[in-house]
Each structure stands twice: as structure tokens, then as C-alpha cells.
Length: 150
Length: 69
Image 1 (spheres, each protein chain N blue to C red):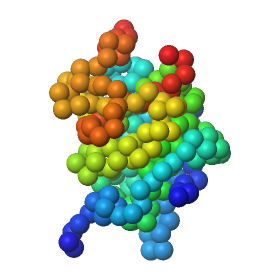
Image 2: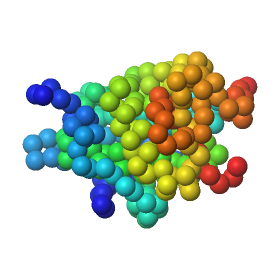
Image 3: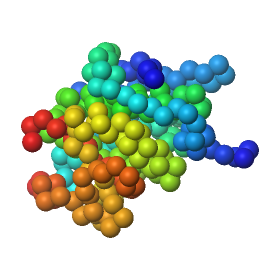
Image 4: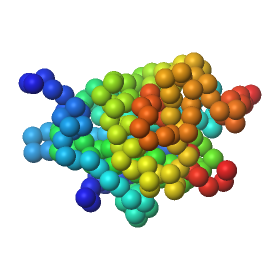
């Protein structure tokens, strides 16, 4: 299945991205922001959400059922582009709800054959240890990095 | 089922999304000027803080445990 993506724009040297989701009755503008963590400046947190009327991000708004694949793929493209620009950096992401964590596990599982050729994928297991991603195991958070330059 | 969230409906729908590198590699992105302000967005700061806490309470591979000063 060829999943389309939303048109992306990049800001701030590929550390901020934006895209519009337009439905028949509503439209949202998503921001995806990569910020360095204090634990290790090579680990960047991936945060994304919908811009609300105040210009602030809201991560509680869910895209419509028909848009989820496109939104996830578009955010995935930002990971690809961010790590293309900064191949030495790791990207950290985790869902803030059980549903989102399940969704991320599923998307990675469905695409691991391709992802493993391009990225190192670590998952946080039930002991809070980051280990190499293995199919069939649920993880609470993820760290990914380009496979090159290791 | 009225409150069955969009994400759960997606998880149980048939939209299992298989992607390939071409889906990512050949995407053109319009590059714009600096925004800057989003680094200070409360939601982003909160998310980054949550990431810091989560990473601090986790066991990272040795290569990632380095602290830059």
C-alpha cells in the first residue's frame, strides 16, 4: 500500500518541521520539534503536536481516522530527514498514552525490515533498559539513529 | 464503542502501513527560515523534560551514557 504523506516544510536547520492536515470540516497545522536532552546532547527528543489558536502545541488532538497513516508517515519522514542532516544524533520518542505506545510499536514492527537497514533501533524494555529492538517485544520508548557512521 | 478512540480504531483497522526507504528518501521538503520560538513552547519544554526524566531513570547503552560538560 502506498501511503501518501503531507507536504513538509523545514525550519531551523532541520530541527523544526511543519505540515498541514486539511479535512473537509477542519484543518490542523502540525509542528514537529527536535530538542536536545540534558542526559546526552546527542540524544534529541521528538515532540509533535497541533498548533492551537494561541500558537502553542497541543498533543492531545487526534487526527481523523483516515489521516493517522499519513500523519505517522510524515512524522517518520522528519526522523529520516533529521537523522540525514545529523547522522551522529539519536532521536528519542515515546507515546504519552498506552494507545500511542502501541501504535509506535506496531508501526516499527510492520516496517522493521526496512528500518533495520537504515537505523539502529533501541527499545526500552520492561526493566527500563534500552536494548536492540526485537520483533514481538513491546517497548515503552525508542531511540533511533542512522546506521552509518557507527 | 462511541468513545473508542481514533488511534484504537486505527490499530484494529486494516491500514497496516508498510513503508520502504523510497517513501522517505525522495521526499522534497521546502526549507524556511528560523522560527526559534518553538524551542521554548511549553508543550515542547514539558516533553523534553519528560524525555530527560525517562532517560535518567533508564539503563542506557554505555555509549549513550556520556555526559557532555
